[in-house]
Image 1 (cartoon, each protein chain N blue to C red):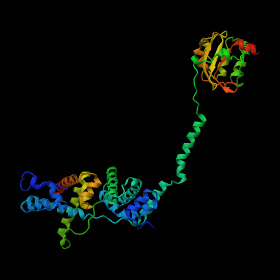
Image 2 (spheres, rainbow over the protein chains, first blue to last red; image 1 turned 90 degrees about the horizontal axis):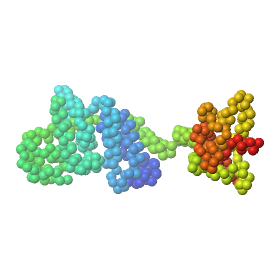
Image 3 (cartoon, rainbow over the protein chains, first blue to last red; image 1 turned 180 degrees about the vertical axis):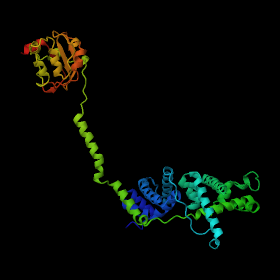
Image 4 (cartoon, rainbow over the protein chains, first blue to last red; image 1 turned 60 degrees about the vertical axis):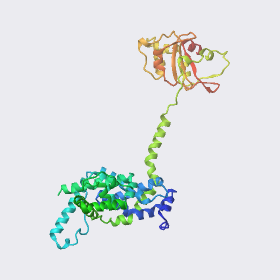
Length: 184
Length: 261
């Protein structure tokens, strides 16, 4: 594709002007990011893949609204998050897949079966606690802790002041902590 | 960002640090001054130190949530699928237009075939000067053209002819029934039949539709609503004067028909 070396900004401008092919490299660049974001919300690979496709179609249709000169990442993330939130609202009845985990939280876990079981139970508890969180709190926790976005980025995505990000995140963390220890 | 400054907050219990500061401290989102204050506080407050450790533990578990790799179909074909979908919406296949086009054409044809032109109704108050355009008055210096299949058919059917026809069955009052038949209406009941001695006039508009019926020979004939109900709306034919479509007051009376005989 002859557009591959172009910057996001140029690709976006070309797409806006009707050069459909210029959108293709943007899909390549951001598909994993969008997939990861939506997976965090939907917790299911098939749904996350389908939703990623929907997100890119939505991005293309909305690209005329994208303000030139602004960073593309927060904008596309926001669309992905909104699509994911809408998805889980309408598909709430579906049971998410059980959460999978990677790595060992403790270095010596491999050698200690008791520690392994304990660790596994802790992870399951945190998953259940996350499911019990209200949507708003879960969203901000995913954005900050799992997606590791800064307060500034979260502020732009959710269109709320940075101070609100700080207070909402703190309250969400506290709720999660309480639920986590309640389920002990 | 200027978070709550510890120095400005009222004196709290040792462990009662605003949760926002603890959370922001954990995320490294505090300015240096506030960060140092929290750090110092954590050295002396076991409650807050415990809480922040619990936050860290939970954060750590959350970060270990595994995001499974997407399928190879996703990796290799997502781009194609999205682009195909976009192009399809940009340039929809002509067949997809059929679903819109066919009903649209059907509606269009329906309108063309069954659409009735708006008719300017000519009420009795708008009646044209029937005296001036009566076909029998030769002195009228206008050429009047009445279509043969409509009005003329009516005017050429004399009451006397009808009477002759009906006399065989002994029904003197049937002429109006014949008129009604011609107008495609049910015949009026016996009580509704007007006297055949009266002059009956119908107003037809420029499209040939009967819009009013009156009886009486005066210059201001009386509207006959009963008879009008049977004839109104019936299209006779479009009358014209010198080739120009016009509204017309058509008279069909026994005398007129007799004179045309």
